[in-house]
Length: 366
Image (cartoon, rainbow, N blue to C red; front, side, top):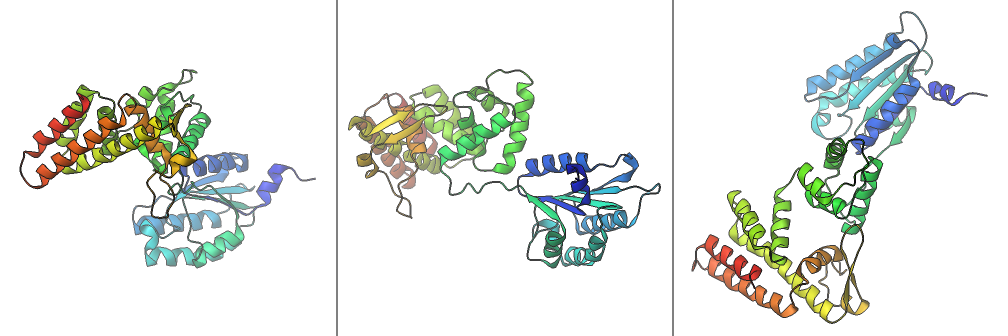
């Protein structure tokens, strides 16, 4: 009976690809270790990363030569074509000369027998409609690791995914850690692996819980995070923090009117949350992050998306948690202040920066 290793070596070509770069890298490295010949001289690694068309054509030629060059001392040879980034329609992969070079490479692919030569290819993606893509997928044993499409996923589900990835990376996320990570990175899954690696280095080998403040210090901040924190500081009545963050935004040449519009959106959520809470139609759920639980009666008051579905309750829960120290009446008055300030800004009746600072101070001191 054949062993698992011999079954692997009987496969001529292994192809590992997908948009989850970290998973592809890990799976390819593990497979390369299992396929590695006893003689290290019989392992040849070809760099598949190409910044230019010439780089891509050169990499293809190197892979061809590696396949055709048999081991000098006999035995099986492993060729690892690593981190190829030109099999799809992005970057240099769009160019005709690269497509032609890949199509011309097909006869050599068919010569790989899994005995004298085994080929392992790892790549971020592949165009399955191209002649080369069709040929490779037909010849190879393929595995794919794709990141989830998060555009139609609720914020709560995304945060659960982040928590899961943190735990997989050996981290112990405390309350608010995954939530803060989401605020800093959004659904940019390409940034997740990089930022999680930084957090893992920060945490070391200890079992200390990863806090929200840890994430705040380590993960790269963005404009969106500053705006988020500014709005939350206003909702929480934190005057010093709100003005400090407002100064940071204005120093980045953010529009005063734009900031006011974003703040108005959060104030509207605070007013809605207060109305629902005062009518016992909303309860704040507790867990690793704050979420809003709205009764069926309360659902009728939620704003609707274009599809007709109610908005996600994640942002509502955030606003509700920060603003619960004030009644609905206060937040409606705050909205009135914002609209008056916005009108004076747009009509040129006031200095925009001064008007924005005044409305923020009035709200946080109310």
